[in-house]
Amino acid sequence: MIRLSIPEMSCGHCEKVIREAVKEVDRDARVTVDLGSRTVDIETARPRDDVSGAIARAGYTNSPLT
Ligand SMILES: [Cu+2]
Image 1 (cartoon, protein in one colour):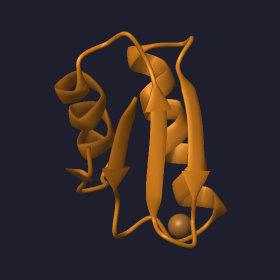
Image 2 (image 1 turned 45 degrees about the vertical axis):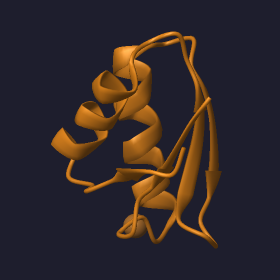
Image 3 (image 1 turned 60 degrees about the horizontal axis):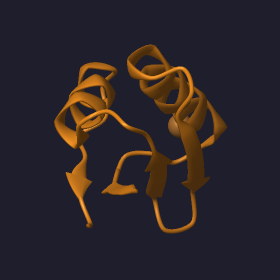
Image 4 (image 1 turned 180 degrees about the vertical axis):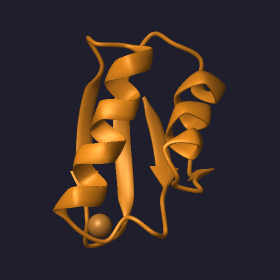
C-alpha cells in the first residue's frame, strides 16, 4: 500500500481530482482519502512514482509517508 501526504487536499473537489488522477494510472486502484489528515492510502500494483506523478500533474504536491 502507498500512503501519501497531500497538504493542499482540502475539500471534496480536491478528493475527486486526486481519485481521478489515480484511476488514470490504475483504474482498479483502491483509494482511501482522509481529508482530516490530508493523507491518501492507495492499493495498487503500479509503482509509487507513477501514482505520485499523476497526482502531482493534477496539481497536488505530495510526498510518501510509507
Ligand atoms: Cu479542494
